[in-house]
Structures are given as structure tokens and as C-alpha cells.
Length: 185
Image 1 (cartoon, rainbow, N blue to C red):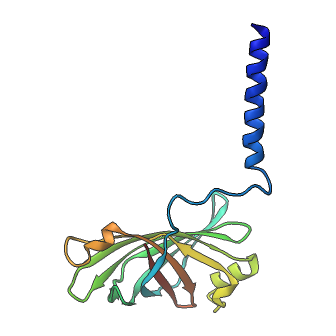
Image 2: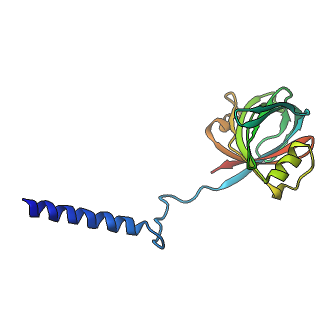
């Protein structure tokens, strides 16, 4: 009985070692089960902003709120305007990470209002982060600014937005933000 258990244990150990070796350095990675998704450019929102309201240091981060005052939307899949009244709640953390949580509305030419919840991150060196926070114009390749917007529209021509996943890239300018929206296909 002891020999049988030892053999089973040894066989199990060999299987585990083989499995660990297969996943180790230099091992071939498994192929994805399906082709990689693609991105389709949908539109750009140019969002105008009020000056930031600084809350100060809260729970280890610099909190601030930036009100949205309006803007335009233009692209192959949607055209309209950004309605005033939304905002971007930001937490600037040590090390150059800024967490963003924007909420606002877009309005199509036919009057349809689209709700946008747009969480994401902006990552930059502490120097670039401070320059952006001070309202300076910083080249977009100096930082990483990505979001995962969720859009919601009533039934009708824009209902497709409820059934799509979006990713976006932001570019921060002194008085506005440009956000390029992409549909994940």
C-alpha cells in the first residue's frame, strides 16, 4: 500500500513539474481561442472645461473636480454636442497615477441624449502630472491617458451604443480634453 501511494505521489509530482515547466520561461504560449478584437474609430468628443476645484489631500491622494461646460462630438458613427453640467472627479496619486471618473451627457442632432460614464487612468511622470494639473499644454505622447467608457442611449438609432464595448484615448489640453472613442469589434 505504501509503495502504491509513493508511486502515485511521484507520478503526481512529475505531472505538476511538467505542467510548471510548460508554463515556465521560454515555453510556447497557448494561442487565443478566438481572433483578437479590433478597434473601430467611432467619434471624438472635444470637451470644454471649467477651472478645477481643488479639494486637497484626501486619503493619500490629491482630489479635484473639473466641471464640464460643453463641447462638440464628431465622427463617422456619431455627431452631436457635449452638454454642460457633467464633470470629472480626479484623484492624483503619488508616482504619477491619476484616477479619473467622468460623467456627462452627449446629445445627438435628433435630440437623443446619451449618458456617458467614463472611468480611466492617466499615467505620467510626476513633473508631467504637475504640468497638466497647472493647466500647461503637454504633448500627448508624454503621458498615458486611457478610459473605458460606458454609453447608454434610449431605444432608437443610437441603441447600438448599449450593445457595444468602448475604449478611449484622452488628450488633455489647458481648457479642454479631446477623447477619441473606439468600438471594440
